[in-house]
Length: 340
Image 1 (cartoon, rainbow, N blue to C red):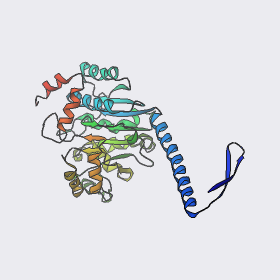
Image 2: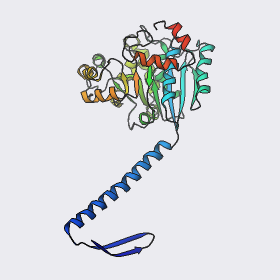
Image 3: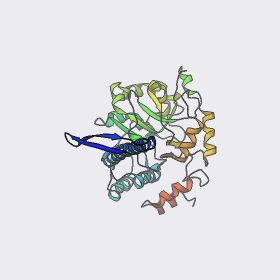
Image 4: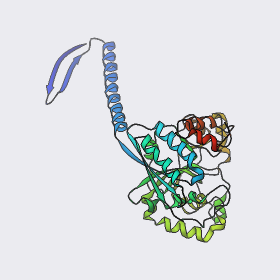
């Protein structure tokens, strides 16, 4: 192969006139050119990915608790801060009842002094939802998530995480999920056909509301907080799954599932077992067995429906206690939950 002419044009552009002495030489040249172009493409993709991750981003995260859920919430926030990217800043908005103790407030605020990449914003909900149905293990703060679009008027989107979660990776990918035309995205729940009790037979996505991406802008646009309150007042004794009932009944047309890595429930100890979750789902657009296996092996947000602070035999219990050790209150946690 002979390169007979290199002609520069404008700013650095050039053309090549080439003669080939053999077909093999031509193939080698084309192969070289292809590798060269793929290398250039790969360089720009990596640079874009690097710059995207390098860009600083504030991620609002909402939670709720009372004094009884203080330590699990601290463990959850600790896991988030231990695993976040240095370029992510977490804005925590933590709602609590008026009787929330000063000691509990102080312990939460120590987290923003311990970790520079977050802020802890406490919101007193006074007596909001005090008359809502809360029989069983659910307490009134569970309903607070229904008020988010009013409480955070300057935010368009927020992540909701219950205090019984563990987070193993940065939350930017979850926060960046498309929410166009949706109120919520959540992990598909294996609940019975509850919506049908309210005359809803086409509910494609019954979700667990313990881990969600929440489109506050869309909720405000449709005045959903008022609709939530009206629904609770009229159906209080029917809210068998409490705030989760409210969300799934009123919002079912604007709900979508989360990828399985976000909100994976600690029902299982192995990926093989996790595949079985698909068999108890009623959603039409459901998870496949491959989805569940992938979620187990690549979990970002784990939802501890089985409580690790109550039973060391539940899946991921040891992992939860490892994060408890990273808090400043490990001795107090062991005293409150004396199972280790």
